[in-house]
Amino acid sequence: EETGKSGYDHFMLKEIHEQPRALRQCLRGRVGELTGEVDLGDLGDLTPRAVQFVACGTSYHAALYATQLFQQAGIPAQAFLASEYTTSTPPIGDALVVGVTQSGETADTLSALREARRRGARTLAVTNTVGSTAARECDHALYIRAGPEIGVAATKTFASQLAALNLLTLGITSVDDDREVISGLRDLPSAVQEILDDSVAREVAETYRDAESYFFIGRGLNYPVALEGALKMKEITYKHAEGFAAGELKHGPLALVTENTPVFATVTGDDEMARKTIGNVKEVEARDAPVVAVTDGESDVERYADHVLEVPDTHPRVAAVVANVQLQLVAYHTANMLGRSIDKPRNLAKSVTVE
Ligand code: G6P
Image (cartoon, rainbow, N blue to C red; front, side, top):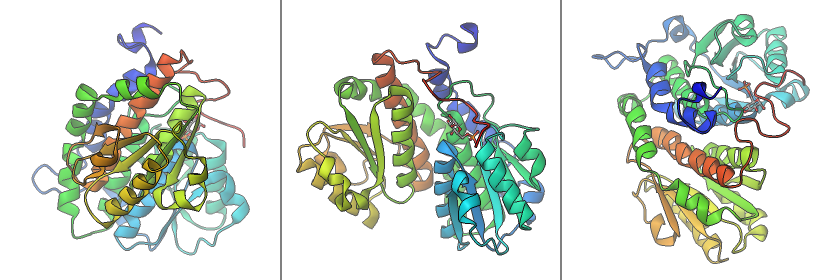
């Protein structure tokens, strides 16, 4: 097992560092070198009128991200927790039902996909595992090509899911800024490498290692990043962490904010959305909460932050993926300083095959 870690202390850290390579593999051969056309084989013919995503855990956060991509392209899209999908029985209409599942074996996701098929839907598995149950049972499969992931907490597979879901949207829709997205995706592996070479996440983790509770906020594409940042933190540190849509803070969670609740705010770009999130950052700052800004430096969020985790200036879709890497590193270093069982956290399994 030690040799499998290639000199890293944990599989999780190794897998965090494998992300540039995993992302290159995901993109390879799927984006034309000269044309910039996205080619996903026969998936390009799917052209759904609506999309429903079903997924669990980290994969659900990737699904939430993807709904926004489809909506931006004018295709109605919803994400469902797979465990709720079969009981809520949403009308499927002629939606394509997409199961996002790293392992392809998660029982809740398989049940949701089977229910969708039973009700006549076409299904697509977005998965890392060739030959998995999800890949075999669905009408189509899109492989994220992240390579094997050993750490229970998903890292490189999340980044690769986000990249693959970008390709899926580009492959079956056409929007005005496709070329910018494609160029952003091409830069993604090196943008992630920059973070890995230069992050101050360890210092941030050291500063806040004794906090009892961590908050993560973001809007738009940075909302799933906030949810994922919190999930990673609780999975491997065993500490309370919560991700919120930044605008929801004032509707309840703000009551919990004190000088002992570090707030990680992901703010990219300098648009209306960024300005509104900065408004929320000011609200927590006024309650003396330490603020860690994860930002590309486009806005002035740094003025209100105690620490800054940098994100290279890139397309907003890509920035969200890179911002997540900073939060992976904070969770990892915090858990490591606390001496946690990082690769096999208590009570958790890599793939959950019961409902
Ligand atoms: C388990 C893992 C999570 C994972 C979830 C979904 O709970 O511990 O890390 O996100 O399953 O797994 P999947 O293989 O369907 O993506």
